Image 1 (cartoon, rainbow, N blue to C red):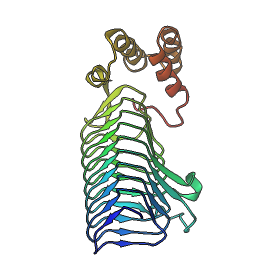
Image 2 (image 1 turned 180 degrees about the horizontal axis):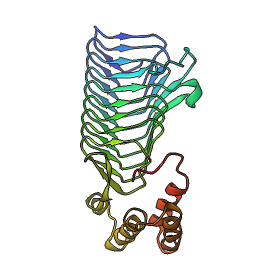
Image 3 (image 1 turned 180 degrees about the vertical axis):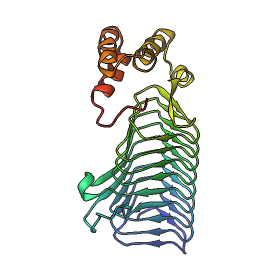
Image 4 (image 1 turned 90 degrees about the horizontal axis):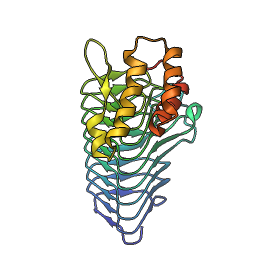
Length: 261
């Protein structure tokens, strides 16, 4: 805990390991087997329970509950972990649970993500980098989220779903199937794909040719009226000239749950 700044009212277990420059706010509780990297700031009234490893230069705001037991009736106290990367922003009242013994044992969050107020990340989830989870967005257990995904306010994902890189989940949309990369999903009577995330791709440097190829892949899968097998054959042809379409097809081919359609 050398060079860490800890408020006198905070309770930090002697077994916790805090890097240089870590700050801990008033009335925060940090348990044993918690490791926090250099420069990370912890606000007031937070709870961080281990085994949890948090990287450097994160900012965890007040009243967040990080590393709690999984909300799973099968959990019997086995040793499970939470691993969080670097430079994440975790806002007020966010809850992130550790993994389960039957689900791989680890919940993982990558780097440079924003988890806004009241976000919930359940056990055994895997989140990539540069994602934004807007207020009250929720992941059930075992959800996989790729890089650069945006979850809008009050959006949610059913357990075991996968959301591919660069996808955009609209406000209030409840995802119950796999969402391939680059898609936009919006809520109507039931959530369904509404095109690709063109604006987000432009902001990340995708040129017109790449976006056009992704649009062709979207049309082949969602608008052609073909069966899934027929659509896969079309995607295989398109993938010969586009790395993005190859990524799209690989996601479709590896789906273990029905696609969001």
